[in-house]
Image (cartoon, rainbow, N blue to C red; front, side, top):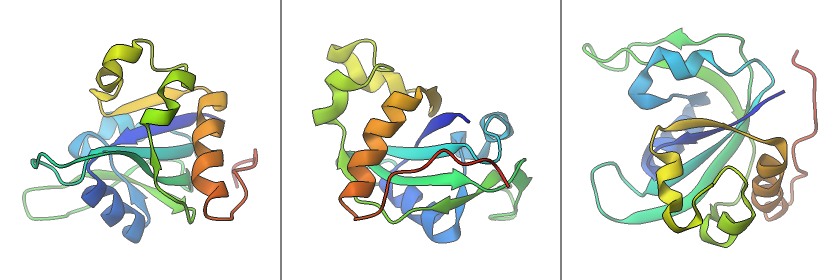
Length: 150
């Protein structure tokens, strides 16, 4: 089992949660192929809305991949992104700043935002567990258990 962070505006993440999907890098197929069925994802949102300056800087959603491969969908006639099916958990949004010093995947604590510049990254289980405990305990749901893919 592996653990991932997707990066997108909060507005886009909330759309994905409502639709039960995950999409990375503006719908590119490469990142969507990397997770396996049963892997976990959390979304970090640097901004509230794409192209607007209002910061978010929170982990916004958390869920588990339900499918084994991406599927391409037609969102608009000229835009056909690759997506994954995700079961999102009820969760509370968690600010990143109090966690920066404890997250091992953030190597440069002074320039921590650069860690998210590629939009999709794999992280260690201990980092994911730290984030998940914060997001799920506040929503009174248990943290993700290690489960075998169905």
